[in-house]
Length: 168
Image (cartoon, rainbow, N blue to C red; front, side, top):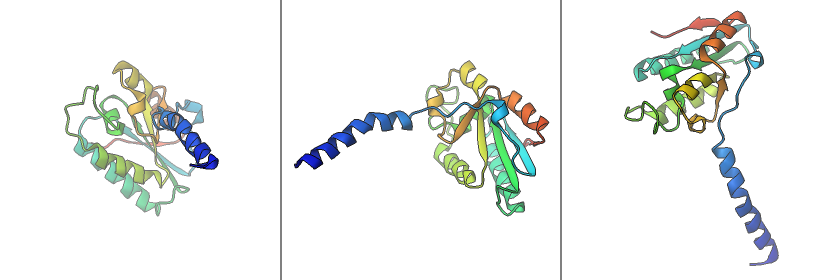
């Protein structure tokens, strides 16, 4: 191995712990005042229910909702706020959680949620739920954001002109 190859390898190996830290970092915390209504139409979907079928129906409704606006994130802003049992649908791994024995199709939900990101959908997770249930924020999907309170965020968004939807 020549000198360049040695330094390249050394640099790569030195960066592995740093890359692992980034990969395992918990989602960012967002202040209520940082959440803006930046489209004429804005909607908050409330997710606090435990049923996977209901959650999938909500994701389907979001896709349909976006389609009415030609999937244009400049025409509509959609956010999902999850707290309580709704948080489980945004976790990479349910081990150590109250839902660890449930057969939720995490990978399938992850892909659908990730697909919605392309259309500007944002996912907010309640910090109070994380603390009360002692959930590891590092187990949340990397695209989620943590808000101080789920119900607080819903009220705040409504005061900013976001319409409220909860799938039954």
